[in-house]
Image 1 (tube, one colour):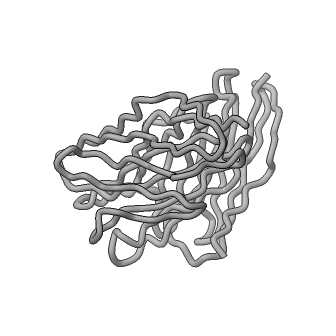
Image 2 (cartoon, rainbow over the protein chains, first blue to last red; image 1 turned 90 degrees about the vertical axis):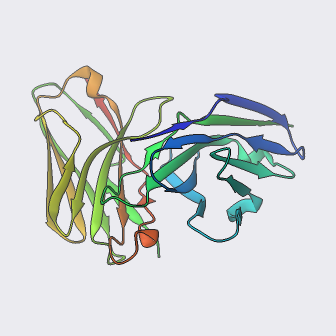
Length: 115
Length: 116
């Protein structure tokens, strides 16, 4: 079984400041990792994914994330946030070696960008 | 085109009503999913269809009945729901072919359901 922990339920930050949203996971098998964003009253949009290769992955809207296997982490970063980045961010995993194709989500982090 | 379309966007129903949620995608994806999301919580998987066959049912109560009439459509039939079933219902789809690496899930905007 897999589990995903997002330690910060809310992250307030000022516009143009850098931000890091933390994600740690636990799994007995290797996993693929994802970050999704959910804007108010909308569905989920894929920000970025780690499948293999370089541990630093770049996504849409200037976000990037770094996979650290030894620390089982996949933290999301952006060097300068905008008001429009205010949303809920979910980290998620899918196990590599099973037929189970369902995402396991973390509890989410609410990013609040203030002017 | 990575669009998953869900209708209706909002639905209010009484506990004795029967209603259906609809999900449609035209990306050629062969796996489709229903998730339930309560306020301020992450989505929780309900059902997975793979090649029009139900492959995962996460012990969902029988008042929720999924249906996959073809590879592009996914329905969720609702009957005798309870107020605690009020939530955002999200549909997703993925290729479900070849490498698992290609199973990126694309989500619709959801149907916000209120049960009175």
